Length: 513
Ligand code: 5AD
Ligand code: SF4
Image (cartoon, rainbow, N blue to C red; front, top):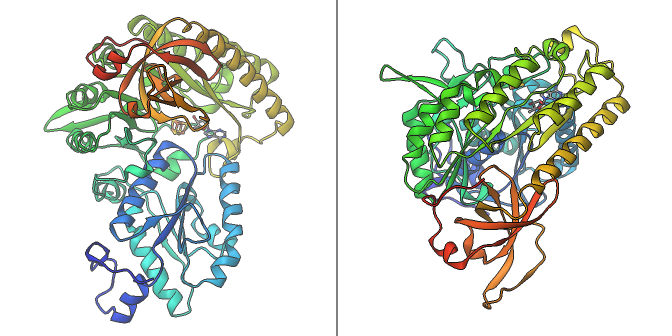
């Protein structure tokens, strides 16, 4: 299928001046079906959203069927080895199809592309280009180049990598995200009412186990002006909840017009945006959890009472090996401040089990920390040695996988017990829920007592708990008051309180947890 329209024209940068009409035909002579697979964190989800929006403007449409797609992208993650294996096996499955159909173009973007550029070409020769985290604006041009090369019967491998620099000369990463039109791709969002907004990129913490500082580059904060204008555009598109993203989001700092803005200042600014009902941010770094931020959450009703602040380990010796820069006592002080300033605020954590230096005794301390801090939930990861990190250089990965697995299960078991106990406290209480839409696992469609259509809907409470209840799908995008009648470790189950409330719901009503 040939498809050329106004928005599909190539600009000079993507297409060399000596390009012939024949080349122009080659880059448009394909079915414009785009398949994209995304693994990893919310940053990656957002990057995929931006790339898809850019490609849609050029005439592409998304498909879930990798076989019918002639443009295939993988947005990759390097945080754990397992995520990389997953991508290599997906790539392996495409080897034959790529050989059969010369119109197929395969690109790899994201952290793996940043880190292992040449290795990807070696292991998966069917890949046409790899593009690092800072160069996503080049994806469209790279796809076109790959098509021209295929037409000329050469499989050239294009590399576009590069990280931003702190000295201000960088701008590669910054340009990459600034060059995108903030009108992004609503279909790629968690729901039409929720959107991610990047406020920072990179990380300067250099925890010994972590590959992120080398795949995402140094920490850089975006200007409040740009962030605010993006949030306004999202609100105009019908977004009700924004989640501000950064690897250490509460380290946000940006000087604009001679004034220093921190995350607390940003929350105050975004709070003024009409149409936005909720503001969240992830992921926080324990040492940067300052009181001004906690007080901003307390004073701003749209800021949710939920913090994701990974402890990573409950033993000081391991925290030291991890180079996390705090002790369990420091974390305890932070939790006390959170509980004083924000009563009822829920906190979630990440943990690593089997990190070099973890003994049975230190593992017991991690279990004890879940009991003490009563996290809403914890993401638990088995240590995965990442080449190039300090931990990989200095310590052997000596804890056997069965031990890591057992410790992982023990952590999950304790966390589940805590989550279920704390969720049970909600029974009989009412919570305000931003309704996201029909629940994915919903099977029930029927009528409520008034004869209206009722389906199982899902949303989240102000403290980030998942809530399911029966209601009219029309409620999606509104804030509904739900009475909780039952719980599981991961979910609150409830029913809608009043119909009147559904009609007049909004952020002006008192916020319950
Ligand atoms: N092995 C296991 N887990 C890791 N994480 C980061 N690096 C590693 C690693 N090498 C976990 C941390 C982090 C989360 C996103 O991934 O817990 O918070
Ligand atoms: Fe990785 Fe540590 Fe930075 Fe988090 S704070 S991204 S764990 S280096």
